[in-house]
Length: 441
Image 1 (tube, rainbow, N blue to C red):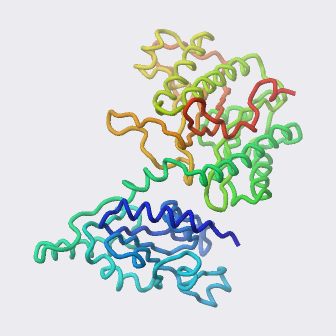
Image 2 (tube, one colour; image 1 turned 120 degrees about the vertical axis):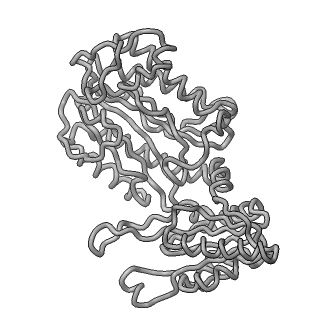
Image 3 (cartoon, rainbow, N blue to C red; image 1 turned 45 degrees about the horizontal axis):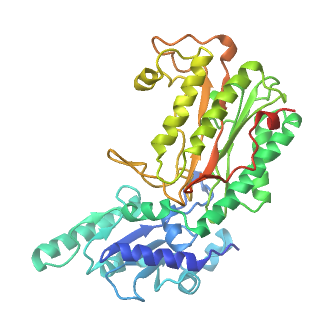
């Protein structure tokens, strides 16, 4: 049985409680989600709940009570021990386990939440809870908050506002600790090795589904929880569909194979890597030209992922390189500045160049605050993933060249996971090769 490092979670809770400064936070865990009939999807814990507790069971709720004295600040409501339920669904920690193993100051049965929640919230200045995300208890929380507002108007005590925990937790999660960086190194390394296995095995496979099985079987073999997201295994024209997950087309010689896949560890840290390889072992002249443009854009963008830069700068560096390359081969025309202002490149490149990576694949954290770009700081981890996708799906903008048939069906994305550092970013996914000389055989 996987056991998280409790010291890590205790340290996070102390930081969070300090930030609350008199407030009471309610952080619900995830519930089981029905797949069909009486079958559920595999359980995936809520990331914020996990980040603060390390408790990996459904139907749990954590309270963080910064208005209480030490020893009364971390409360868990969990499913109690139940022999029959455990026979059917597996082990539960129960109330004693929540206190002994997960260091809750006090644990209660989830069935006592309605009775005890008003008692625990009493005396707090504000209530911290995410509206619109937890319908099973939102009505209860709002009723308690309403009652406290009434009490405040009469007695001068009680919560006077409702805030989102993301105000505090997004900032905490955006900067990765050394512990988190090491966990992500492992997730990304396993992901990179899986991509290498695909590259080495491509000549023996004849369907996208076989590649998916190879990737995800490798993740499990290496001890990961499984894929971090629905693996994208897209050959030929499918590579121009950004979130293609059917993964059931034949692999045809002469086509490219775009694979966007990463693993998730047992403590939910993720990898996210994309590689595009020639199925036959050789790029055509058109494929090679496009690949070189994307690779050049990615390398240039990665160089700018340093402390003090920002996500928009990374995107713009990649975008300019892509546009200049596409102009050189006649797929775009005109002034680069006007192409960007008019967004007349978006039939060929329609997404941003990266995102934060962590407990969520598209991890929490602001990229900008109004007009203010959030500067990159040491310890941030993000993806850098420019691409070019050439198809008839989006009409060619007015004034841009029509697309010759020889280019259509070429979709290329190259994605790496980057640790921001002061002078030179670290490519955590460097083990997944991407030079043309490495991809051809």
